[in-house]
Amino acid sequence: MKIPRIAYAAYGFALLVVIIDQLTKAWIISGIDLREVGRVFVADPIFNFTWVENRGVSFGLFGDGSARWFLSLFSVLVAGGLAYWATKADRRLLITALGLVMGGAIGNVIDRVRFGFVVDFLDFSGTGFFPWVFNVADSAITIGVILLIVDSLLSERAAAKVGVAAEKS
Image 1 (cartoon, rainbow, N blue to C red):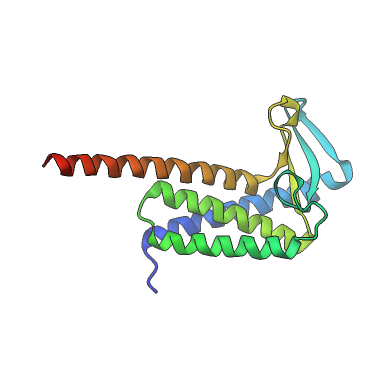
Image 2 (image 1 turned 60 degrees about the horizontal axis):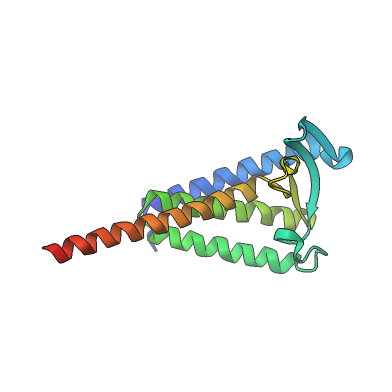
């Protein structure tokens, strides 16, 4: 199977997310030893580093760690599906979105396999608007999903314009 050049951009974004995610987690684990400290006040109460071992998925679902290997396998399958989708994609926004979600999924899988949990540390809970603690991979997934939605809306709008133009001619 020949991989189109544009797909390599998605893989590049994914690799960049994995590298940044794993470097920040290594810094949190070893550099400032957040696991031992628990919390580092950065711009209290707006932003802090807080150690959280996320053994489940969003909102504490499967928080007992029982789904570790299922979640890891699921994330790898999702990343693989997105990697395949990238070979069919032809829009830059879509490619960017796919790369961000792939990289985030892989970054969190690495944690699940290595530690049995995902390392979360970015804490904006003091704002009162966002009570969760997350990491770079989670951020990439969130931004990637938002970009997928935007890309879908934009491509639907463009398709509708093409349809209207075809009807007029």
